[in-house]
Every structure is written in C-alpha cells, then in structure tokens.
Amino acid sequence: MKNTFLLLILLLTISACNKPQKVDLLVVNAKVYTVNNSQKEATAFAVKDGKFVAVGNSETLPDLFVATKIIDAKGKSIFPGLIDAHCHFLGMGLVARKIRLEGTKSYDEVLEKLVAFQKEKNLSFITGRGWDQNDWVIKEYPTKEKLDLLFPETPVAIRRVDGHALLANQAAINLAGITINTPASGGGILQHNGKLTGVFIDKPMELIMSIIPTPTKTETTKALKTAEKICFSLGLTTVNEAGLEKHEIELIDSLQQAKQLNMKVYAMASANKENLDYYLKKGIMKTDRLNVRSFKYYGDGSLGSRGAAMKQAYADKEHHHGALIYSVNNLKETANRIANSNFQMNTHAIGDSTNYIVLKTYKEALEGKKDRRWKIEHAQIIDPDDFHYFENIIPSVQPTHATSDMYWAEDRVGKYRIKSGYAYKKLLNKYGKIALGTDFPVEKVNPMLTFYAAVARKDLNNFPENGFQTENALTREETLKGMTIWAAYSNFEEKEKGSIEVGKFADFIILDQNIMTIDINKVPNTKVIKTFSNGALVYQR
Ligand SMILES: [Zn+2]
Image 1 (cartoon, rainbow, N blue to C red):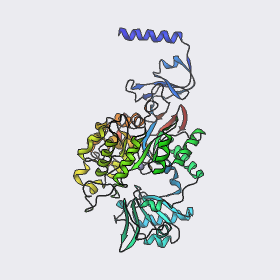
Image 2 (image 1 turned 120 degrees about the vertical axis):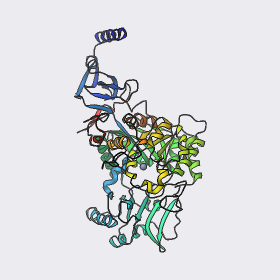
Image 3 (image 1 turned 45 degrees about the horizontal axis):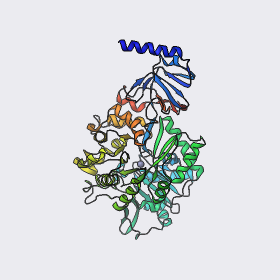
Image 4 (image 1 turned 90 degrees about the horizontal axis):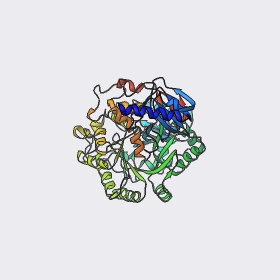
C-alpha cells in the first residue's frame, strides 16, 4: 500500500515536471493483449516513429503524450500483428492465374472446370492445383486419357491439393521430353499397362514444373501486392515465406525499399545449389521488413499423396514407405554447409522416418553450436522415441493441417502412429515454444482458423464435436504466442516484434471480438477492424 502510494506520488511528480511528449499515435480504451510476460495487459499505448514508446493505461498516458492522432478503441481487443510462420505468400498471390480445384468431387468435375477456365483465360499453358482424389467417389489417382482428348495441344499440369503429386497431359509430357524410360528417383512417374498415366509424385514433378513458363516481373509484382492486401485484411503483418528464389527475394526487397510493399517477409531461400552458393557467401540480409537468414529444404512429400517417408509401411498401401526427396548424403552436406554459417535450416518433414533422419542430421551438424534455432516445418508424424530431439529444434506447425487431414490421416498411418501425429502440445512441451502458421494457399489464409484449430482441434463443420486428439490442443495463450512472439523468436526477430512492448515496431491489430474470452466456436468469425504496420494504418474494415 505504502509503496503504491509512493509510486503514485513519483508518477505525478514526473508528469507535473515534464511537459507532454509529442507522439504520432495514441490508442486508448483498449483491451490490449501485449504478449509481454512482464506486463500482460494494458489499456493504452503510444507510438512514435513507427515504434511503441509507451504501454500503459488510459488514465495516465493521455496526460503524458500529445498525439497527432488518437484512437479510442471503445473497449475492443488489440493484439500484436500476427505472424504466419509458414506460408507461400507469393504463391498465394499468383493463384489468380491458376485454376483452383479444391473441393472438386470427381475427376469429371476437374475436367469440366478446366474447360471453363481455359474458355475464360485462353492460356498457352494451363496450371493450377487443388484436386484431391481422397474427396472423390473413386479414390484413385486419375489418368490422363480424358485430359488428352480435351486438351490435345495445350499443355496442362495440375497439382494435387498438397503440391506433392501432379497430373500432366501428353502435350506437357512431350514438351518436357519425358518418356516411359525416364528415371523416377525421389518419388514416382506412374504407369499403367506400360503407358504413362500422367501422374508424377514428388521429385519427378520437377521435370514438368521446370517447363511451366515463369511469371513476368510485372505479374509477380501484382501477385505480391494482391497477397499483401489479403494478409493485411486478416491481421497478418509478417509472413514466413517458405521457399523463394533469389530474383523473387530481390524483387520483394526493391518493392519494400520503394515503399510499394509493406508486408514484412522472413524469406526462406530455397536450398538449391544456386541459392546456397549465393546467400552463404553474401551473408544474412536484414532490413526492417525483410529477413533472409534461412534456407528451406524439402525432406519428403506429403501424407495425402503417400510421399511422406515412414519408418514402417503405410497402413493403406502394402510395402509402401514413401521416400526422402533427396539422398541422406545431400541432406547431410546441405546441413553441414548451413551449420558453418549463421543461417538457419528449415526442413519440410512430414513422415516419422524423415523427421527422425532430419532431426538426427541437425543434431550432428549443430554439435557444439549454440542458439541456432533450426526448424522442422510441419513435424507431422513423429515416432514417440524421437520427440526428445525437439529439445533443441523449433517445431513450426500448421494447426489447420490437423483438422484438414484428420478425415483420412489415420487410414494412412493407422491407430498407433496417428496418436503421435499433429502433436502440437507435446512438441511445445519439448522445445518450450512452437511457431504457428497455415501453409497457405494449401490452407486458407485466415489466422483465426489457425487459432480455432489449435485450441478447439475442430474444423468449420464443428467436427469432431469433441475435437481431434485434444490432448494435443494448445491453450489460447499458447496459441497467441505461437502466432506472435514465438514465431518472431523462430525468426530471430523477438527483439523487434511479436509483442506490444516499448521499443518494438508498432505492428498491431484491432479485432471486433475478443478471441481470448469468447466462445471458441465463434473465433472463426472474428473480423479485423484495423491493421497497423510500423505504426501506419495498412488496413481498415
Ligand atoms: Zn509449405
């Protein structure tokens, strides 16, 4: 009591002697979730030159500051700007040029959509993604005969929903120079009765992908701006882009420098030879909006396409284990090269075999090296014996994958292995932190769906009623941290973002309802009212 009284006198004295400081923005009457452990909640804050300069309460801050602009939040809740720890930002922006096949109920529906799409767009090469044979009555991979009849001359290459299988027509196959004798390592080129079916799985997909015409600089710029608009409207202020090429990173940098792009991007460079040679020599590239300090490596494919490498055979395909995309030697060499720099290695690992091999390789490569924050992207199916490796490796997971895959994942891996699949709480307990993302456009962009899936472990159909493997649900507080401060930490950015804290960039969002207290089933309908990046309004509903 006495101390409180003294503090009050002190504060009054300070405010009485000092004349109010000029700031750019003062936000008052808010319910601020700071995500700062030493000051969890506040009702007001001040922003100057793009950074938080004070976080406190609505009674005292207005006396201490004169603001150019004042926002009365009228009791609404405010959170740090959200981070998507694993997404395909540019890819999402480019999808308008591509056909979307998500939700198609049959192969015939896919074909109908292709015909209608081409009638409208008249493209010289048709690409797109989203089909999923698991959603069809006949749950088998399609074959290209009908596609060849409909598109005898125009190449068509459409990827499965997870991007780990691709259907191509003969025109595309001819253009790529592929024959029945083309070798298929790191995946498969499917055949039936001595003929190609048109389905390519994992690495051999590159043969087709490499002949798809790349978008022009103008198209790429447009795509980035489209993606930015969508992300800001949903409360994202930083995106971890999982795999870019050098020219794409450079375009993002130049657009940011010219103030044409305000989204903050943690750009993982694809771990190919060209990028490794270039960025390891150049070193970390860091501006206020761009952070290039990591490589994205592909361990395996996906569970849906049975490309993910499993220690034991798939439960629904005899003798089939999936496969690593590259050799173990390639993985080790790459890991050792990256370990000798300050860069992080972020590896896509879905199957329990891949997770084990990658985690073990990480451990060896990082021997004696401190605080390197290497990540496993997805960490989907983990052998119970291997969780301990996550004591030093950051799990970067996508809660909506759990609620999308739950319908068929157990078919793939069986009753026992599914129990240590999508095990976010267990992963969090090992490392002490977990980074959350979506993998959009594989999943929807909306981070409120991530929040809902992580906490409720249900999808938008309210299924399953009591949640999927809820022993691995996260609390709301953990989820919020995974989308803010822990994601920032996973990027080595926790000193500049991820919480509403003095000295950090003023990235924050105002929501129309309080996701920390409302009925969890209402969270998916939450709307962003305003989004701020470096103190500037970048979205308003
Ligand atoms: Zn991804």
